[in-house]
Length: 460
Ligand code: UDX
Image (tube, helix red, strand yellow):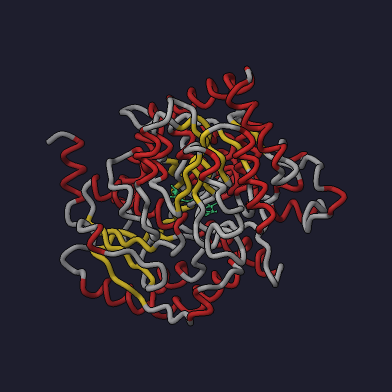
């Protein structure tokens, strides 16, 4: 039997249990990973919370189990992200333990090789250990931002954090070109909660059986080397996940995708449209919303804008825009509540991606070779934006916030000036690298093979 067939035989009857953190930017990569491992022959069970749960019928290839999270209506609608995280961690721990224990005792025909979980759940380590189940972490952020998190003890020692206003523009020498203002933070009513989270993630990682990243070696080589050195666990950069196996892009979406934007894009000239989307969590105020609207309108370029309900604080949807705003643009602007983003970025009409640099969006933009305008909001997004603008040099950052003149200027630089052409060339080279690494002999292809062998070697 060929080595490949032998590996496939070994995987048959091996089940993996995956436990996504219930936020869109975490669900997408975990479910994409589930698809990859299923494609490679493993049986997949997904444990999900009732909060932000997926409809199992959209993934008939997986077995789903739901656990009760018991979130009250106000807890589920919590704006303070860290508080929401804390509620989920407190309320899901026991239901998860019970669910996992029941599954392990019932799945005797098909032994469970390991649990794959998200480090934002801080109880998975103790539960897995108590049930003697190996566990591997999926980090849904990039390796560069993870390396910055892992430097937090040093950053404390050197006085970079807590951040002081007078030092925001200073480069962190040890992490150059990252600046003090780029260091990941999540604003909360209780700032100490964030540092606790970073400590717990870092601590848990050290004891896990491995670390999976949705990235590729050529993109984040230095950061991956730092992580390997710091954590002494096997590290598997096997991304970009969404390019590994074909999948229905709408299946993981918590909001329904408005496909009218694809018909609208079909009417636009190649590379003429600015696609604007700030992911699933970021929020802006009314004044910023209007600056974005006028910046786009004044640029005189076509734009497709995702205005998620909840994006503008205190508004249902588009009410703050002056009446007749879109109509006055004579078809040059299209607004939707949620888009099929990967399909949009792959559309030939899209020329620029204005993004909040969430890791999934950043990687999706790179995979389609689209130059970016960056406006990061919180956590890893600031580090990602610095890498986009100053390391990979594939985009521009709005350094002084959301101002209509700055927006107009950034659009012009990217769409009409030589600088924009150079940026387009660089991102298109990264796109080629992203494709190559998944082919036989490529780094992500090899790393996926290593991951599979690693999983097969785990004894629970
Ligand atoms: C969050 C964090 O912000 C991010 O920094 C972290 O790395 C992961 O979790 P989010 O803010 O939602 O995620 O951003 P991002 O990581 O970009 O994920 C958003 C996902 O939603 C992407 O996969 C994107 O394709 C999808 N999306 C977004 C849509 O399908 N349609 C849309 O209209 C907008």
